[in-house]
Image 1 (cartoon, rainbow over the protein chains, first blue to last red):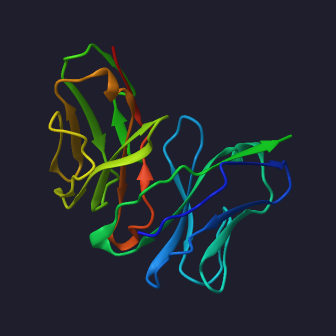
Image 2 (image 1 turned 90 degrees about the horizontal axis):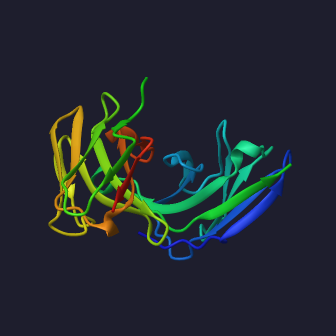
Length: 112
Length: 114
């Protein structure tokens, strides 16, 4: 699986959009970009994933560059409850290789 | 939907004792995963099962660790004998084959070995 690089920490004002970057310059054509987050003392939670098109769901939006070497997770209106560690993961989405390798992630702090 | 259930939530034991962690995956999920999280090493995959069969146990740190899945609704992770360096939060997760990208994690078991 391709390696990802994320900033160690970020902060954002409550109510503003939080934009979390991720570099994955060695991504292969069949690898997807996934985002999970982990709120303190809880298990990780799936947020969103994508291959090459931008994706949006009720939690966030995922913007993937045309060359697929980087992506950005966008939380449109951050709240205090969005304070968490956010993990960007790249992996092939086939059932025989379903394991997820978590890196160190980005610690996002939302300030009031 | 009760989600992934883990027990106990907290476990404190003495070095050398046997420890058994338990997990009940979400009904209908084909995959079950065991992870360990520490400050030093982050979140590590230990082992995962597909349809109750262990597929990849390359993350199991040593022979003191063993995991079983006797049926689709139950799995155990056993440490025997336990050591202080095994202190960590152990997470169980499950997913469906048709949506293996989305793993559902349990609340974790915080293990302290003194």
